[in-house]
Amino acid sequence: MNRTLITLGLILSAFMSAMDTTVANIALPHIQGSISASPEQITWVITSYFIAQAVTIPISGWLAARFGLKPMLLFCVFGFTVTSVMCGMAMNLPELVLFRALQGVVAAPLMPVAQSVLININPPQRLGRATALFTMAAVVAPAIGPVIGGWLTDEWSWRWCFYINLPAGILSISLLYFFLPASAPAPRPFDVLGFASLGIGVSALQLMLDRGTTLDWFDSREIWIEAAVSVCAFWIFLVHSLTARAPLFPRDLLRDRNFQTSAMFGMFFSTLTFTSFAMLPLMMQGVLGYSAVHAGVLSAPRGILMLVILQFMGRLDNLVDRRVLIAIGLTFFVFAFYEMSRFDLSMDGSRIVWATLLQGVGQGILFVPLSTLGFLTIAPHLRPDAAAATSFIRNVGGSISVAVFQALTVSNAQTMHASLSAHIGPEMAEGVLPPYLSPETTAGAVALNGEIERQALMVAYVNDFWLLTIIALLSVPLVLMIRAPRKRAQDAGPLPIEAH
Image 1 (tube, rainbow, N blue to C red):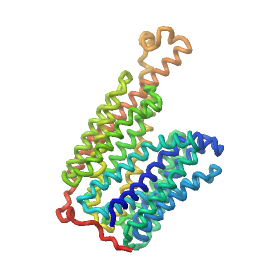
Image 2: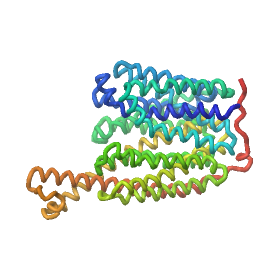
Image 3: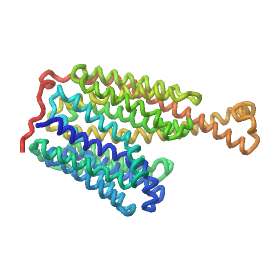
């Protein structure tokens, strides 16, 4: 078994899947003009992908058990490659939305199944290094996706944002087909009610989060209906999962304390990372007035440092207690968000770079131990389900946190705007405005209101960063819940895989 070539095939598949979450975003204006879609309609090109992915992720474990890891992985990579080409060939909006939804369906099991294969082919002493390489692909791809998408769109066409997956897909399929040994499938009953209730709950929740800002949240009847459907569906799923004979996610996962803690860490981690990734560019461009390029340049050192740290983490993961690494990574997150909570309108870009560098160190340290520790005490046949559950929790947790913090930002900005407006007198207004503008004139009043909005929004972002600091601080004690794997579990080899 050639682990290097198998890992390369897994990395290529992960890179394709992760990059497609962002590569098309930069091309949306070009796609909109090409297929004559309205601004509201074009967002479904992105939304359809994420909804289909969120609904399909929970059954990744069942699919892998039913068909086997190798056939399932080959099907996902092949299906992702084909649907990418179909997206590039779409001639109108309905076709593109349909093909993107199909792409999301086949992409959903890809990452969990690939992660399961990676864990199974590597013994614990090699797992950290392999996970670091795999994680680098998942981290780098979304970061460079907009750059690649912009270049392809400008030089060729938006369709090449999808066609680019063809050569990578063919190479990944070839490596996995010829070098990945087959594993015996272990069919089990399909939990129809569990899948249906969870799928409906996730779809309703995703729709509520996507449309909440546009419809003014719970002032809209649609949002109330989607919230009610989501709550009812999740309640049915919870009760059914605790009582069914063969639930969608095996109950044995809940008996493993490391997996429980890893899942909670995954939710905290996605909250901290997804939210900061969403808020920082908006703050830099909307409040500080940076261009998109300038904002991207200031964010780039974080990703570069994270990649460097991942190189070392692959070697340290098996040498240092993973609980210590997680605690250190979370401590860097606390300091990073504390630095962000001290942002102000007069700062320069160096303070943003410093804060994001601290976050990059924390992310680089956390990625590998979080990806390995939760699986070391899990039985091999449960690993696909564990990977699917972890991916599901992180994706849903990230979506919820971004929506909640966006709503908090808007609400806090409105409250602070009202407070600042009530306390600004004529003398203070003249000190804020340029000498040639008077608050008594229309132009002066508009300029003054714009400055109040800018300062109110900055305060709202600072409050958000304070809340993220508290969340990061509260997650540190969870490290005490992690159980150190027994020595024999650490020394166990990879899962036996049958040759074909």
